[in-house]
Length: 174
Image 1 (tube, rainbow, N blue to C red):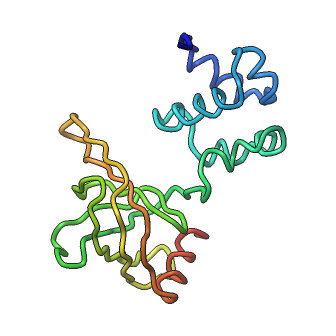
Image 2: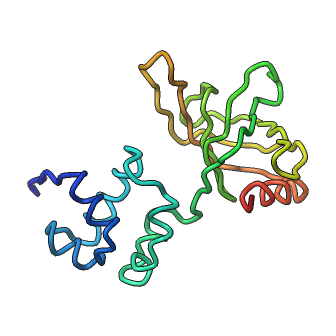
Image 3: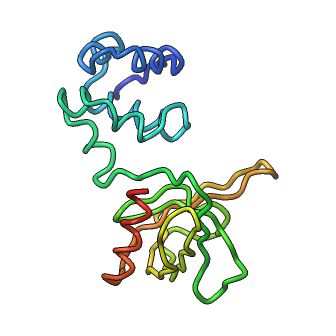
């Protein structure tokens, strides 16, 4: 059985932001490519670095293809309020946190892994997009114990019309 080592997240993030190459990072922290990807995923999950920050590091893609290893369709952080609700329960509102052509994470809508839903994504005045509907399946959930934080769930898009996909692309590009 492989023994797990502790790596200082603060030190690792500082080294990433300093521009250290992925091969130098792996050498310094004694990581395999798999271990390196795992550390990056954990840092993103802990919100110590953003997916966009990792994706902007061309050395990652050039050195070992880490960007595609993290997520096949990188998610775009939504920087404006984008309301999402189950199509059959418009009073239950959530907010899209990030989105891609294949999925989204939503804050404020409760779901269980494996549960299918039809979502209505409401347009925002900040982006030239119309309201549209998509079919999704919950892939993961994260309950927040903090009363000020909402639960978050990740959804895979299982069905989307051509028109809805066009609206989704407008949001992703914004």
